[in-house]
Amino acid sequence: TLGYSRDRSYIFNTYGTLIKSFAPLPYMEALPPMPNYAGWDKFISLWENRLDIGKAQNAVAIMEKLAQEHPKDALAQTWAARAVFYVGQYYTSTSEHNAKGLPYYKKGISYAEKARTLQPNSVPANYWYQLNLARSIQFTSLLNKARYLRALLNPLIFCSMENSTYYFSGPILTLGTMITNAGWVTEEGMRMANITLEM
Image (cartoon, rainbow, N blue to C red; front, side, top):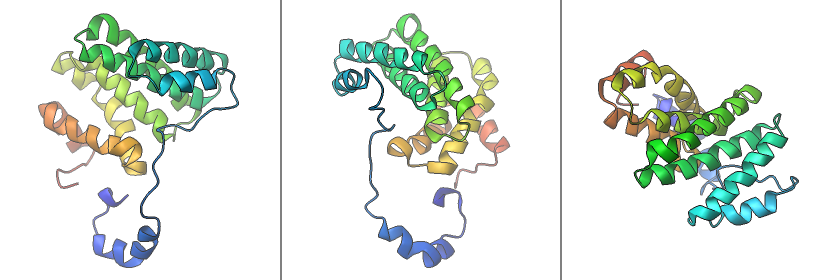
């Protein structure tokens, strides 16, 4: 909220004591656990060891199964979007983006779209949606990126305004990366969204 507020003196004079009373802010996993679901314990055990890509892929398989078995559970859909994003990132980092990473991002978009349909105001659902979408178009033409600008900016700005510190300040970092790396397409999009450089 502070990032989008102009009068910081008023904010800190009025709410400073309250804000400071919560410090240090707690942090936790990007998504809450789902311990009541069969397979969760196996998933989380593999997920905690996801640096081993084989374990990450096994975790993804379990989470995708959970998401498919519980299509009305927004959290299961969001977890699936996050999990496939991780494996997609791995393949992007090993120069296998198109062949191996892209299919994961496309699955992530699909899971996150389901989650957003179920819970439109979920910061995690919107966040993992825009990350999967951004990665899926990362190496495409500027024209294609421009085509998806609104689809990226709307959930990202929502996340930034609702909880800009979500997942290690992910919304702020993503906006910053877009501004520095996406050139005129993002500049135009930010102007359309009334986001200034000062903000």
